[in-house]
Length: 458
Image (cartoon, rainbow, N blue to C red):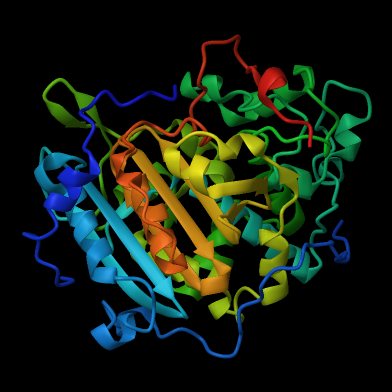
C-alpha cells in the first residue's frame, strides 16, 4: 500500500528549536550436506578478542569522556529523538547506538499506546517486520557452519513437492537464492493475498503456477512468502520448528530476553507497543494484524531495543562465541545489485552510491563507506537497523506508527560519525517508497506484481 503520510512537514528548524528545552540526561514456521565455501567480497572483520559487557552492566549512556573519543554526540541524538515524540509527532520510539563493543545509548521515547499511555522503555517490544529476515539468514548460516545445510542446498532436496512454473527452475533454486531474493518470482509475490488472510501453505503451492521474471539466481525481486521457505528447509533439515531454532541458537545465547515470534509472543510481552495509524484527530492505536506473522522467517520477530542492541553487537563481531566472523562476512557480502534502493528518500539520493542485497541484509555504499542495513514495515510499525563496519558502529530505531519521520535519525548519526556535512534528513516525513514494505503496493491480480517492469536483472 505504500501510503504517503498526509501530515504537516516538520522542517529541521522546528525540530532543532525543540532541542534546547529538552532534558539531555539519558534517563514455524509451522540429507544433510557438508559445508561448501562461498565466495565473499572482502569485508572488514571486527576483532573477536573481547566480548561485550553484559547488557545489565553496560554503561547507559557512555560518560562524557567516552563520547569525546568519537565524533558522535550521543546526547544530541537522544534530544532529537525526544523532539520526535514531542507533541505527538510520533507516538513512541526506541533507539540503540552501539560502538566499539559498547552500548552508548539505549532508550525509549514517547508512549506505547495513545489510548492508554505507558512510557516506551528499553524493554518495550515492537514488531520487527522485515528486520526479521536477518535472523532467518543468520540461523541458516549457523546450520551451514554445522554441516546441516549448504548455501547451495537445493530447495527440492528438502521439499521434494516444491514446483515452479518453468521446467527445471525448482531444481536450480538454492538456499542462498531464497535469502537474497533471487527466486525468479515477481516482486512481493502473494503479499496482497497475505493481506487478504490467505494461508502460507496455500500460497507456496501457488508458486507452481506463477510466471517467472528470470531463472532462479539471475535477478533480484523482493519476497516475503518465497523467502519464508527457509523455515521449511530448517524443519526438514533439523526436525525442529524454525522459531524454536531461532530462540535456541540466537535469542537465548545472545541474551535477547524480550524477543519472541508471532502475535501470541507479542501480546504475551510484559510491555509492548501498539501499532498506530493516522486518523482525523491524530494518531489512532490499532490491534496488530496477524497476516505477516504467517511468514515467520520474513516478518515474524518481536523484540525490544535492548534485544536489537545485542543483535547489533553480535553482527558487529563482538560475539564470536555465537556468530563467528567468517559467517558474518558471508552474510554481509553483496550478492545481487538493487539499484532502486539508491532512489527514494533524500538521504538515499544524496549518500548512496551503490546498493546490493546480501543474505538477509542490504549492503550499501554510503558516501564511500560500506553500510550493512535493513528496514522493515508492517501496519503501524516501522524499524531500521544499520552497521558501519569501518567505525564499529551500530544503530537501531523502532517506532510504533506509520510516520517516516524517525528514519532521518539514521543518516544523521551516520553523517556525524563520518564527519559529513549535516543533511536535513529529519525534514523528510514522506514514506520512503524505495524501501520494500510488507505491503503489496499496487492493486494487481492476486499473486502478481509489476516486478517484470521494476526488477533489475543483475
